[in-house]
Image 1: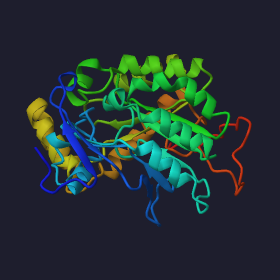
Image 2: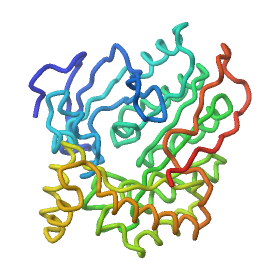
Image 3: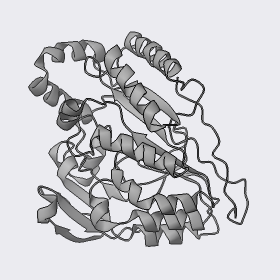
Amino acid sequence: MEPLLPLAGLVRSISTPEFSGVTFHEVTAKSVLNKVPSGSNMPFEWTFNPYRGCSHACVYCFARKSHTYLEFDAGRDFDSQVVVKINAAEVLRKELAKPSWERPQVALGTNTDPYQRAEGRYALMPGIIRALADSGTPFSILTKGTLLARDIPLLKHAATQVPVDLGISLAMTNQDLAELIEPGTPSPRARLKLIARLRDAGLGCGVMAMPILPWLTDSDEALDDLFAELTKAGATGVTAGALYLKPGTREWFMDWLAAQHPELVGKYRRLYGKGAYASKEYRTWLTGRVTFFKAKYGFTGTSGFSHRNARAATGSAVAPAAAAPLPGQQPLF
């Protein structure tokens, strides 16, 4: 559908055969850096999302509600109506050059994936990486997109200028389930190969194993296989947690669950009640299982991923000239 209100800065809306079912809304942005509200418990102060909406189409995506701010819906539109900030790198470079910019960490992949399929068409990330690194601004990237491999040389160079924190989102190894619940993403196997490539390139790579899905991916067999495969791939750490069902996501996910696993609908309603979080008892139980498998596979005390690794230089007016060490972050569990 077209937005009910004109998108700010809209240049054109296009659909192409190679991206069947997806419409790109190309916009020119006036600003691209987003300040996290004060008082937030997020481990970063600034975010940057070159895309809005995401063709990964993950049924459980927590960011679905944000698409309604553009007068799109949180369901099918989130998957198929992708807003592209075509001047993102240019605007970012100008914002980073302001005297007031103190080079705090910038987090990418906090709302929608910067390496979703659209990036193969628009190639915004190379310019973004260069702008951040050249300005001396530390940054973190979380993605499911294997297109990140294209930028490994750039990321290696950036890591000689600023702290760079890379994370891959992977919470299941069951290919059949992945095709149903995150149909637009690269396969679990492809993401495991990406982790290995990053490690072979000398880059750290934590894993965000979220969401763990009650009764679908939380069995000992599923968790054991996940942690075993992450160990083989060389992941530097794992952060794991249960499915989060905020409004916008909850309705879309529960509709999917009713179609694919109707026997679980009642269980999920009891587990989540009217809230976004699973019951405290379930989360305590899951923490115990994750702790067990982290210990079994040597991840105890290692860094997971939560955008905490990259940290700003302390007030220096000049970008660091040599590689900065990647400090450990506090694991969730």
